[in-house]
Amino acid sequence: MMKCIQGINTTLFLLVMCGLSLNVSAQEKDQKYGTQGWQLEDFRVDTVFGAGVTRAYNELLKGKKSHTVIVAVIDVGVDTAHEDLVGHIWTNTKEIPGNGIDDDHNGYVDDVHGWNFLGGKDGRNITVESYESYREYYRLRKIYSSADSALHSGDPEYAYWQKVKKHFLEDSLMQAQTVTMVAQMIPQLKTTDSLLQVALHKTSVYSRDLEELQTSDSATAKAKKAGLYYFRSFWISKDMSLEKYMVEVNEYLAGEQAKLKAFSDDPNAVRKEIAGDDYNNMNDLNYGNNNVAAGTMMHGTHVSGIIAASRHNGKGMDGIADNVLIMPIRAVPDGDERDKDVALAIRYAVDNGAQIINMSFSKPLSPGKKWVDEAVKYAEDHDVLLVHAAGNEGKDIDTVPDYPNPYFEGLSGKSSTFLTVGANSWGPDSLVVAKFSNYGQKGVDLFAPGVRIYSTVPGNQYEEYSGTSMASPVAAGVAALLLEYYPKLSARQLEYVLIHSAMKLPDSRVKLAQTGKIVDFNSLSVSGGIINAYNAFKLASTMKGKRGKTLRMKVVHRNMD
Image (cartoon, rainbow, N blue to C red):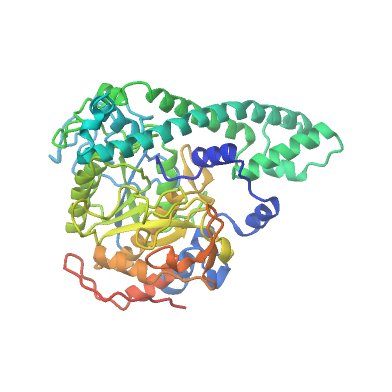
């Protein structure tokens, strides 16, 4: 549901509602191993379950020439002016900026750096949207909620209505609980921060301040304990103060309140007012604007930095790929994305030269799946790799559907260029599956680092966030890096290489946080492993590129040293 980030949204809800908290000693151990940039490291060199990127650069890529790769990021928006992304943003050279003309005749006026499918022609933009469950509930309730609705019980759509109603009730209840609990928590946060500011004689309180604070005053000691709880349990970055975190929590609460209100209003009202399109008509394409930096931009900027932030420039952090252009496409609001926007975003990316598309979002219902499926097939036919976040509900998506996915509706086939990515932590082996990550022996292809990933956020800032939203761009970044140095690899070959070079765990026994069960890590994904750039380059070096050609391969698994 919503964006696949285990940041303020889902972590806050889970911790406040379910009483979950991380053991302090475990957190201290996390601090030791979860260093900034750990996602680039390699288990065999650094003893953490990173993606093997630094090892690939150091041992396999020195002196080799790379080719530019375009990666589309379908997301909430991207801060294209960020200091670590400047020079890594795609530019449509066929478009003359600001002349109000569709110079390249692609259907999008002045799309210099991408397109915003959540925008209006008047410059306004959709930021907070409704959930798909309520949109479908709103559409179907006039038919099925009447006294004689039982007359429709034999209708196939009636069963769908029951499913929609269940999701709607769950979502509306969760939304009300979230708003209530977060609203109650904010005064507690504010009081703690105020007490600590006085005790420390500082206007901003950071985790390092509390770790160094020595006090015999009982009130201060209590405030210190509460402050440390917030920093550790909510995974607040060491570079973020409690005061700044409160600003984010307040912004989050405002968005959640807007979504709660949408459960009693027309869930399509904002869309009608701003975008103005017929959202049920795939042929109504004349909507949106060119402002790809609209909205909060945090999520999309963080994702983009993981893939493409400048390497070794002395700023912030290093991205995975060293010769990538990010094509920002805004189609994901705070709420559930619409299938029409996703389908058109995929097609836009393909038509404008993207070779890889990152999609860090998911939802439990997809009424326009046929449109999305056609776009996924369109990408496959044009040799474009789709990389998708598996989702953050800690569930088996082999049994509980998650959208979008590679399975074509009404057909037995599935896309061969669609990679679904779960999230792992740095370890140890038994705790390597991220507490929130979805999994599935058929539905998830592999895992990638997705816990406390340090990356770019708007305003030339950097923060840590966790989620399959972070794991997906790690995988997309490794795919882009492969394509930079092996540009003739087809999208199908890229997927093959990433899956069949995934690194197996030294000890495959892992714990699933949601159930507490010990299971075999090999059973949680198709590959049974974690993405590894070093292994991927070793395998890619043995293959003949078939970009643009049909590829048939024997399915094998390689776990290289």
